Structure formats: structure tokens, C-alpha cells
Amino acid sequence: MSDPVPQPPAITPSPRRCPGMRGRPRTTCIVGSPLSAAGGVAVTGIDLSQPITPTLREMILNAFLDYHVVVFPNQVLSREQQYRFIASLGKVEPHGGRNARAKRYAVAHVISNLDGNGRPVDRSSSPVSNYRWHTDKAYNAVPPMLTALYAVELPPQGGDTEFANTQMGYAALSEVTKQRIAGLRVVFRWAGSRHAPGIPPLSQTGPEARPPVDHPLVRTHPVTGKKALYLGNHASHILGMPPDEGTALLEELLEHTTKPQFVYAHHWRVGDLLIWDNRCLLHRAVANYEVSRYRRILHRNVVRGTVPF
Ligand code: SIN
Image (tube, rainbow, N blue to C red; front, side, top):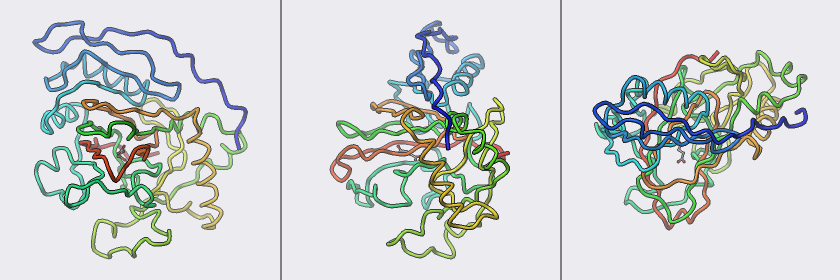
């Protein structure tokens, strides 16, 4: 399927200073060195609980486009402060979960491994969990461009999130494969992976009853113009292709684009805020800790994107 794996871009330590925040001392904010060949950069010396200037916003969005994952360590953010920062980058979408009407939940909703009684529970083997490679809300006609996740409580070790760079994955495909998949469309369903044994039948009334959508398997980044694979856990099948053939192709491409050389693994610390680009990344939570023993709590929001093309 792939040509010899291309060499990743050279990582040069080139910290850059960035503009100060309104009413605060200047020149403290630093865009660091790339965290991996597949993406990721840390931006330090910035207090996101305070409003940011237009220049700083532009610097952050440039880092977002260049590195796909931007890490802001050591933040102390209420849900409202997190919301205000993320809303300065784009239109924050309300979460469609069962608590969507609760105001605080809409401001920044909770991602955790807790059950209704606040006890840790292991859902990592579920085929519909966020432990599977996915891109957020691909089952929507207009999926979000950006997701933000803020670490509130973590296990003593592990609890990583991994990101797979699907632009690099696409670029490394053979020309034959690129031609084979050009123009194909993937059908995404909220319940795309609910064919597995043990998964209860879908409700006909809840959010899971929403109609499927289809998006290009090779999507073009609306800002950079780069092509990326668009697939993952909500991908149900390929339009017009026999189901078995479509499933096999999706699995083959997923395995390819999640190879270690295309992956950045984020090792969380409490106070990290991450933003990432859903248009060229897959991500998954990693159950590399005692999931049913330690609590893992993060606050999340997503920013509206555009129709994939
Ligand atoms: C997500 O899938 O949006 C969250 C990933 C994580 O919990 O690490």
C-alpha cells in the first residue's frame, strides 16, 4: 500500500518569542520546539485565563496549522475561562450529549472514566469508546475543526492521548493507492462501529438515531490545501463499494496512518490545555493506566468547522 516511508521533517530547536498579552508583561510567551515528527508544539509563558490580543491569537492559530496539536502547559482555568479562550479561536459548539442543556456542561463538558456515582470504570474495550481512533463528530455534516481538552485530574502515570497525522499518512501512500482512493466517500454514523457483538441495538429516538452523512475519504485542508485521510471509528462503509471491500480498505488505511512514525503521544500533566486540528488528525485515549482504579477527568470543547471537501 505504501512507498518507502518518507523521512520525517527535521526537528530543529527554534523557540520563538511571541507577543505579550493585553495589559501584561511582554515577551514571556514562547513557541517551543516540535514535540514529535508527527506534530505537537508547546506554547509556554501564556496565561489563558486572561484575554489574548489579536496578535497572540494569530500566533496560536499559526502554530495550530503548523503543528496540529498545541499544548499550553500549567494553566489554571475555570470552565468559563476555558470557554472564553476557545471562543476567541472560533465558534464553540454546544455538546450534544445527554446533559447538553445544563449550562456548565455546554460551557465545557466533562470527559472522564467515571460512572454515575463518580467511581472509575473501564470502558476501554467498548468498540464505541474514545479509546478507538477517531476524529471528533465526523458523523456530523459539518464536523468541528478543533477540539480542546484541559486536564483536571489524572492517574499517577499514563492516561495518554495519541494523535495520528493523517496528512503524513496520506503523503506516504503509493501513487497507485492514492489513485485508487481518489474521489471515494466514506459514510459516517454516530453508531458506525456498533456492529460488534455485545453492543445493544440503537435507540430510534436518541442522538444515535441521527441520519448518516458522507464525507470525502481524502479531504483537503481548507486553510493549507494539504490532503489527509478522513476515517476512523465512526466510519461505517464506503459509498458504492461492497461492504466487505469498503471495510477492508478502511481498516487497511487506518492501520497505515496510525503507524508509530505518524503518531504523537501526549503524556498529560494537570493544567495542560491542548487544542488539535480534527481536519488532519485522528486521536484516541490510551488505557495505559489502571482505568478502573484512578480517576481521569478532562474538560472539553469543540469549535465549528466547515463542510469537508
Ligand atoms: C476525545 O476522544 O475527545 C478525548 C480523548 C481522551 O480522552 O484522551
